[in-house]
Image (cartoon, rainbow, N blue to C red; front, side, top):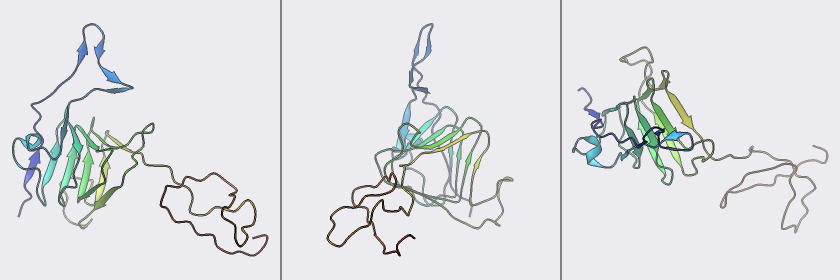
Length: 193
């Protein structure tokens, strides 16, 4: 059974210009009209893509992934697909292809994604694919994949001084980035190790 195909409506486009100056911009990124994945108008008035759908994000279109969609067959990005910065999102898909000029982003270097984004690639890599990229892949074909998350510490850090029974704090030998609610474990070791 072929997958149902969805393409975001590419007829809505909004570019703000100032005569003689050019595109309006925030930082280095142009200001773009953004449509929510969850909005039926994004998908030409239909419900958003269903289980097994093949999704196409057209050029000059920006879609904000503001829901965790059902498992999808594929996403081809000619425009821009951005993960909502204040929501936990799960994306389960067989393949993602980011074509020339397309962008798939979760956070930026200056403003990293601080929520939970889970991307799961499904299917069998040996199944027939529509192109040379294959299946179970994120392919970037002259596009841009931009995934910037929160900086985390290494899984192991030495103590700067011994931890003694009854201590309520420890001094570490290096810089760490821990979040509230994370669990730490202080393991015993032999002196000098």
